[in-house]
Length: 462
Image (cartoon, rainbow, N blue to C red; front, top):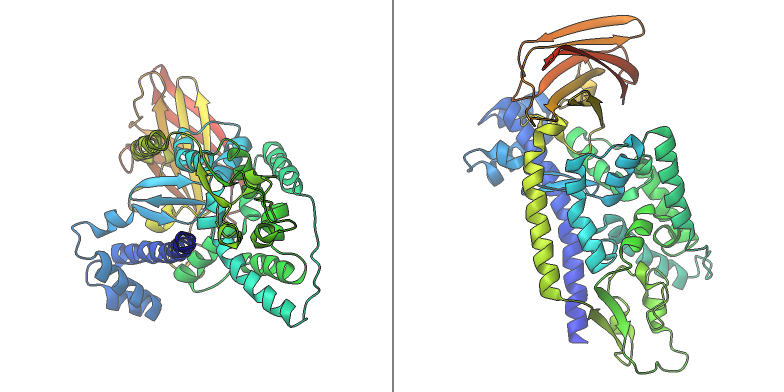
């Protein structure tokens, strides 16, 4: 029992640490942006231009990372939220985010594949542990459970829950993949509350405001308090459905010993937030590995069991992490993102990427709407940044020659000339639109191996 309590306390520590880390990463990211804009010792100027909050964020960045030789560059190794995060330069992408992008674009983007390696390996080894130990929505809904139990004891809520089929989340997952394939747009970001939690924290830290995502989260909380316990995780969450499928071959499992349970005992079922049956093993691929059922078994029959070679699994996990890290570093500029655009680089910013194959070349175009430090204060809020990167498939070399880019929208044309890349092999263009939503046509001209190349690319803006 003592070991079980240690395990549960460890899980709570991890949950709190994940939430705190998210806030700190975003604060460091914004502090790095301010440091970059206003320079060393610029906290008072930052406070004068941006307000007291920016002053304290600048001070926070200075106190935590200011002693480093290149604090801004180091800070670039920590950014993102639960959907896509970079830690020590290793980019980790939610498998649902990566697969949704691949299905929507109908193309294989290698850096995205590498970003999914670590969570895919974790799911196949540890099962749905992300849900029970890391997911911020799970952490929030555990507090919702406590509130719900108190209201029930006071007879403020009905005692019976609404129930639905567990297969619903798998049907929803399939339907959303089909919608992404048909529309060309990954719809998952709009439906994942953990993503909205990260975006709300980002919105508060950067802009001191909230967006519509907070209402979506509050709606789920009210639904669970009034109607059913953990209905989102049990019946609807597409991420939970995908992780459950990946967890089928898992090596770590909650299992019961061969002894029989006490007649009529269902303590483990009552303890399970997902309503599973640990004592029978039914549907345990959906187990979140939270361990809440273990101390509730009066006979101590339940426990974590490791199936397989643990040393081999650890070695494989470390190897995958280093492999993903190396390829993430190499692929940095394939995305067309600059080292110094810390606000714009932020993984949660609305970006669109398109990869076009033209003869012997891959052409990568990354676009995002202008963000800035305070978008509402900007004179050009509908500006769009274009980052263009060209790679020769045969030689593997990046194109660094002259380039002409013509942007056409509703009959209006604008021509940009670049004699060489703006940064390493990346060409950067900032264009002003009347509205930064809709579509446009890019006509890219460059000097190829066989002469002047002319490529037309249709781009959908955010």
